[in-house]
Image 1 (cartoon, rainbow, N blue to C red):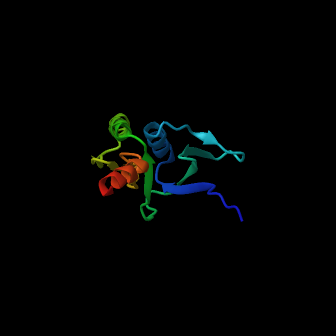
Image 2: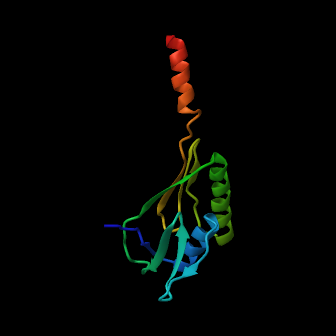
Image 3: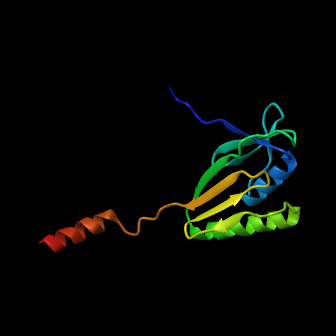
Amino acid sequence: MDINFSKLILPTTNKARLFSFITSVFDSDVLTDQVGDEYTRIGGINIYFNEVGKRYSYPKSFFSFNVKESTNLSDLKSKIEFSFYRENFGNLKCELLENSLEFCDPDGNRWVVEREPQIPFNISQVILQDNVRNY
């Protein structure tokens, strides 16, 4: 059986605000599917936002993505700060660590973007060095 992840639907108290934030931070577009529903695509996943009432209580979500370069983390942090400032989203929760960036979107969902682990050298070099030492 071949199964593919088709979409992720997130509750939000303000759909337009969350679309604005997410598309700005991740350089993605607002797209429309065949039935007219809007979504955005990040890392190959279609993300839909379902607007719920402000009194609606729902558990906050957690998301994790990987980037190849640590400079991508700094760029994302700048975009997040700018989006919060431009849209006046309120208190920003954003922390840039050595190999990750952790932040909350305007709805309080937690996002973590981590730098992919880097292999500092070719494994064959390690084997060759080990053989030379043992010779």
